[in-house]
Length: 408
Image (tube, rainbow, N blue to C red; front, side, top):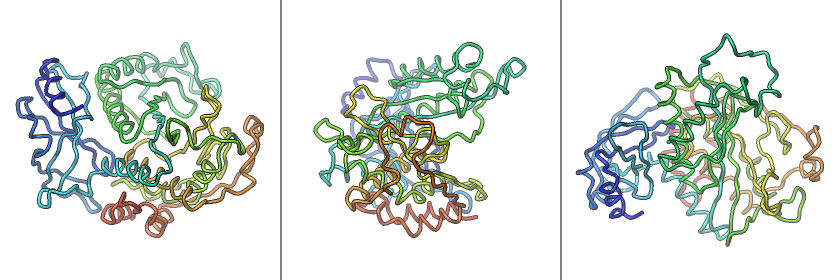
């Protein structure tokens, strides 16, 4: 949507206020609200000067930036009585007027631009799974002793958050977000699936969903609680409308698909480090993952997904060790790892390249569990970061800050 179309939309819908939002490096939304009359066509180029407080390694610091509205990235906020349009903003350095290294949304956009420059694929399609847990409302009637296998996709009284998710889906639709599906998960109370969509649009939708979850829970006198659940993203790399990850090799993958998995395995520790590099996170955390391609494994780093109607379209599911954090940086890092694997033909151990019928059995093809401390992840991010800086996708300043976030 062009700036003129955004302004026309505001007039048509009776928008009274504009909420400029951007994400900080830790994955939290920040915002500043302006009257709708302050949003002009020129403002989409000149932006709005603003002091911002950013979470740093040793506390917080203030910095002057320019917030530049992104015309195509906007939502109607269904939680506010006053008609308000949320517009996501890029971050520009106030002195150089160049894109700031603090702009993590721009990192995701550059990763897609780099993908296109390689000629490997021309677009990305991804689904994102966002689990969340809520404070229970009927603890006295909810039996926590029920096995997780019975709770997965449960109905009736075992899915107490079903009304909450239905309201969330309705509000998301008002905001312009389509929820692919939602259900009772086996690892947390609820799971929302977004997509398929491209980057960074999918991350935009996720940030709005997180906002709606928090707002609705507060409205109902509840709160979102921490859980040990992990999130996952299912990836397809497309060229001329066809998935380049699908083919006639094992598990219905192409050789390119296997090289992409090889890149994920090769840079697994760095991917975990990017996901966990958040200010204030405990440095006593250990991260475990299994070098497995089996969906029944409790800690697989990567899965091959068969659940598409078109059998030619295989997807690679990559798990993240946290449900919070910065989705733009996490997604960009995974895409860069896959591209590095494809370009350098990173091999996957032959024992993992099982047959399709092996994926339907209850036993993993092969399992190799790795355990990393935060210090391990910090070292990996410092030493294995070159693949992230290819195409100027990640900057040295950004990687240095993320590395510092992992310090004790």
